[in-house]
Each structure stands twice: as structure tokens, then as C-alpha cells.
Length: 98
Image (tube, rainbow, N blue to C red; front, side, top):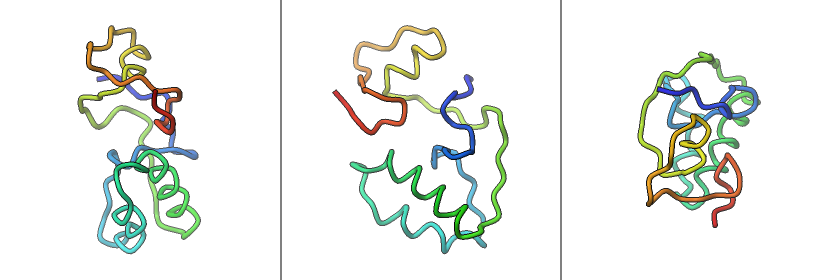
């Protein structure tokens, strides 16, 4: 399992890696109301909102979640050849796809 170099907790975290406890549920409404088409941007906005709202946050600077990615850049970052059906994108946060 490789650690993602773009997820550093300050200012970015991938929300698929969050463990959300009951006390923070009220901060998650923004995340669940938006569609998949803006998911990469919402990751950053939700994390920033939670920090600004004073939610109790912790960050573990090591790989803790493993999942298959569809983005070619993730394979290249760890020195692997992307699968033929991998998606190409112009940045690491997924805001601009080819």
C-alpha cells in the first residue's frame, strides 16, 4: 500500500479516508449534498470547512486506506504502469480531466 503524496492533512485530505465520529456529523452536510461531478473539489472544501468550524480533527501521516484507483497518475506516483483503462487527468486533485 502506497502513501498518497498529495494527502497531507494540511490543507488537503481525501474524504474517502475520513473516519467521521458522531460529534462531527453536522459538519458533513456539505459533503453529502453535492454530486460526484464535484467530488474532488468537495474533498478540499469539506476539510477546510471542518477546520474552520472548529471540529476536532486528527491526521495520521501514513497510509491507512487501500482501494483501487482509476487514475493513471496514482500508479505513476508509485512507479507502476497504469492499467489500459486508467483515466488521465491534468492535476493530482482531479479537478481537470482529459
